[in-house]
Image 1: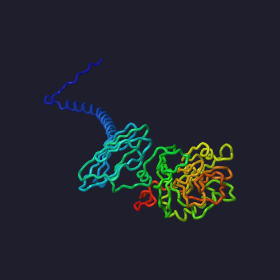
Image 2: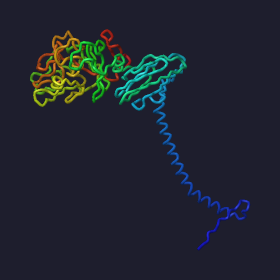
Image 3: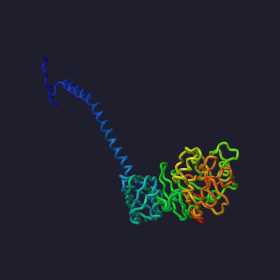
Image 4: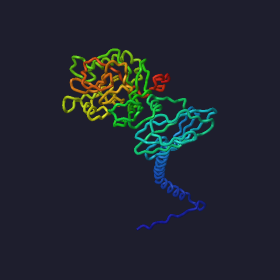
Length: 429
């Protein structure tokens, strides 16, 4: 057995034979040869850990502290983010004016889901327990030069989420739906049950369904007028996708039948009504095509189990269930007609008549067709000239054709919606 030899520690000054120094250098080199890769691996692991940690904090920083600069003069600081939900219910916002002149800004909600209330407090705002709705909270807030204002938002509810934003008044654009929501108080339930006549102005009402949230006008409202394509229209509702549904306040130039007299198929896409609507679109609305959204128009063309009535008949006339969901057949296009549900939501009664809601027009000398199917034969739902619902009028009678379109969600309007100051297209699109 070989004895282990203890390496001799040699001081530099004691070296007389430089071969000993070479042995030491070789030993050091060998150690470095094996240790260097370990150092590199350790350094790489440490760098990755630091990078991951920094990313987490960076991501959190970006999410929690957002600064938006407008013209490098107005800075908006969302100190703990601008998104809220049922877990994150308090936000703090500051606005700084670094210019040498007064600046104006506005605060608004967007991307709202669910129902909640809010309180917003600051030097120039004190709002408590108001329902959260898409649109502006307050306009034209002034901030003096070289100063900062702070606001605290507190939100409460069950299942909700949304975003609060602040923008320079100079870059403000009120999309049509936002403007409507800003100028109207929102109700969460109609004052009178849907299916009963209403003669008062019930205003704008929120309706949550599976496809999303709609806002519809009900009753004898006076502020849903629109002047578009040289024609007067009435706002029916704001759709879940942010587009706005309008119905013409007049018939087409000609009164026509819904179905062709020799028709074999009665669905809306094969109807005489759609032919007339498309002709009207080409003649009068085509120049405004950029502002009109292609949308789904609900025909609900499915027979009920009795084989005599369509599904909408029992749902509406018997069960009095009103919905904006399309439960079966629909037509996708640029123009269509009202559904029976939209007419009832506006104020028409299931039984009797009503001449005191916004869809009623005393100048109409006949009724007008909806595009909802009522009875086999073919009998669509028809709104008579006294405001009552008819289900036994053949589709071949000459009745009113009342165009319906949807304004795209990113179109800017101005006005207040009254007959003497209707909503009109903004010149700044």
